[in-house]
Image: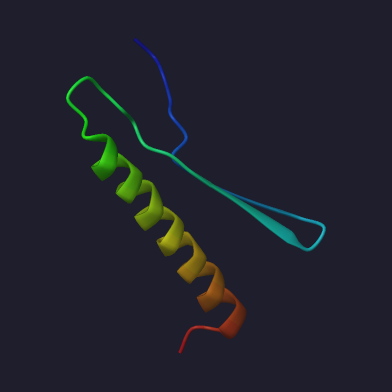
Amino acid sequence: MDMAITIRTLVAHEGKITLGTGAGVVADSDPALEFQETLNKAEAALRAIDLAREGID
């Protein structure tokens, strides 16, 4: 089986950034943990944006 799941996406266009995060949910997934995982991914992406704007020391 060939498949791909996009779980982190940043799109910059006309001065705006759109952020998308997701998780691969399977039969034994814990929905609360999967949701927390998406929040963690979003937080990491937002931190990367902040570092890029500030410049990395």
